[in-house]
Image 1 (cartoon, rainbow, N blue to C red):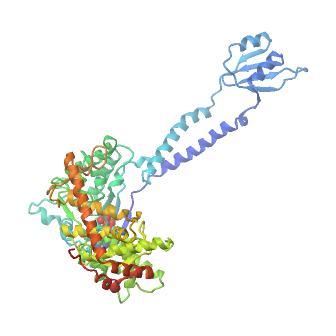
Image 2 (cartoon, rainbow, N blue to C red; image 1 turned 45 degrees about the horizontal axis):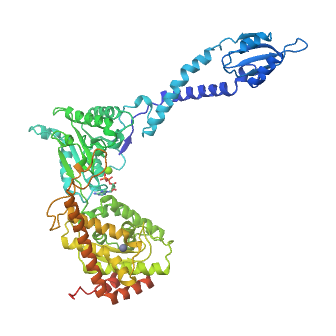
Image 3 (cartoon, rainbow, N blue to C red; image 1 turned 120 degrees about the vertical axis):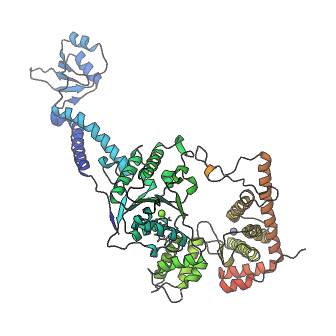
Length: 619
Ligand code: ADP
Ligand code: MG
Ligand code: ZN
């Protein structure tokens, strides 16, 4: 695919800049070196001038508005020395001069040469233009003033270089099926119009970031072999009101000329935000106008018109203006979701083609360990693994490189440089073993695969790596409670062993409390509060000032009840964790001691240790 950019219009800009430079230079010369253009008398203070007048030393004075120039008397009658001073507002001066018999006159008004006149007319507008250009170029454009309204769309036209097809996209089979139809529309519109079917105008790709929306749009263009105009929603939003909408107009004008073709608007939410919920500064006129223009354009091309299909992508469909989703606009929505197990394997396969894989690599196993990863994450994972292999001087990428890469993505980079004191290390070790042991007994966490007291990532001093054994889309109450207990396992171990608590558990507590709150306010899992959603939907979640207001308006009693339910859930989980750890105290000591020695326990060894954890017996 070749990328063609719109032709630029640089000539005006160059001329303007040269003019600006020249006039600036003259201006500087004029200000700092006025002597170049005339005699340059020595400046003296006004008081000295008055003194000299009073002493009768002054011969002649020329009084100007901004300068007084005077000449001293000499014995010989020769022209004397000339001085200059800056006048103050002094009405007595003429009287004084007359008294002393000094010859004086007003200076002639400064003669405006053609040159200074020209300067005063030319310089200010040029400065204005320069400032203007500065702002425009900051706005992200490489184009000159005159092309301000032109669309910045990149046009991908099918060409020599690698073209993207559906082969390059995996794990989003439903989306592909829907889009194959769009390809058919573009290739053979006649087949559809002949029976009177209306060809859809707008298709909205909806899904989390990195799931391949942009990639899919390019693949549609590649498959259909039609031109592909691509622009990002954020590029429409400009400094100047009205620019965005004229860009939209230009874009569609060009597209219609090239039909059949695809217009792809990435990040549609940047312009398509609901007009009622707009946030800062009491509304954004520019965005609204751009949006209106887009709606007009989409309504504009009628059935008989050339086939222009508008694809758009967003990860925040709930924030879009409902007007965008009406029939005849983006009435088709295609969900591009995170891939499932087999999807992840397929995506890994695509990206693994680019690297040399070792014989031991098992893509399926990697896919199993990466639930929740989007396509972009998987692409990144393959690259990380390849980088690690290269760093380890390997010729091919091995399975262990992938394992390390996953860990990097999940837990962050290892920080060998952070040195913990022995006491800290001990606390961290018990803390992590606490997580692991509670995690081993409760469901909903996945399997504990590794505990480590080597610092890694943003905050972790040590960490417990739990990897799911299967994809989970639903969690039940028991599993959520299990997760909360596991999060509190670290702190509980500290309590039991050291009798005191450190600051290390703050992140655990944060997550546990969040989870408990969600159980109560979003999932309706509290018996007291019932199956009500106390969290507001995203649409209404933004007030006029743009600040999120996640909780519905509730009465004071309800708020109290929510708080006490959340507290109850967390405390019950805490109790459970404490019980598990007290009843398995010996094992806790044993594993922690071992962890302190080896710093990392993982794999089979860890599994066999954790299998020894005894469930709570009623006491
Ligand atoms: P989005 O637009 O949804 O945020 P992108 O299309 O920009 O995501 O994806 C970024 C990159 O991630 C792609 O260029 C591709 O390399 C990879 N990728 C994402 N999803 C997939 C997928 N489903 N199949 C293959 N590669 C993918
Ligand atoms: Mg994208
Ligand atoms: Zn912890």
